[in-house]
Length: 179
Image 1 (spheres, rainbow, N blue to C red):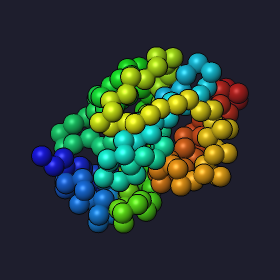
Image 2 (cartoon, one colour):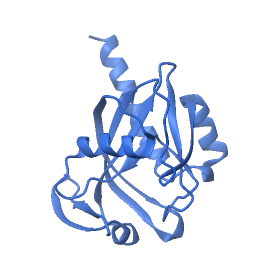
Image 3 (cartoon, helix red, strand yellow):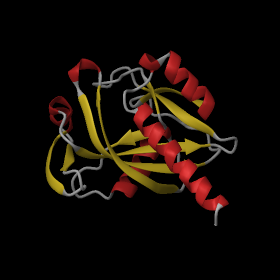
Image 4 (spheres, rainbow, N blue to C red):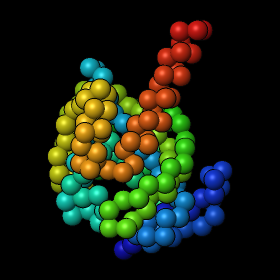
């Protein structure tokens, strides 16, 4: 069965639904989420996508990302996908929403209205090999350096998502300092 995703406008208003592959072929704006899980030493849990994925197979990415189907709540789906893909469960904090559009391999396009969720746990992943082929911890500095030198080993959406998350975290730190 083909999973439909939620089509949205630039204000995140629902305008329809369509099969996920067709949306990525046409580059239509759709609702998505990206999860970044950090451990107690501020390392990100990274996943390597399963080789058989229809796009970006074998590439490294953030902890988990996906789409809610029509009628699903984004945060509930984020928790479910994190458990399904990585075997992890922790509190997820909704942070920022933003739009990005990137070209992926095989001519597919990710054009997403993305909600970033942030979580913290030292629980190690127990990966679902249907979804993920490997995982590792990386510090932010390691990841930023490797993105510069080995960009083709990472998903096309990781850099815009990470950039947005780091900007968000800097703003939160400044708010804390100046309160």
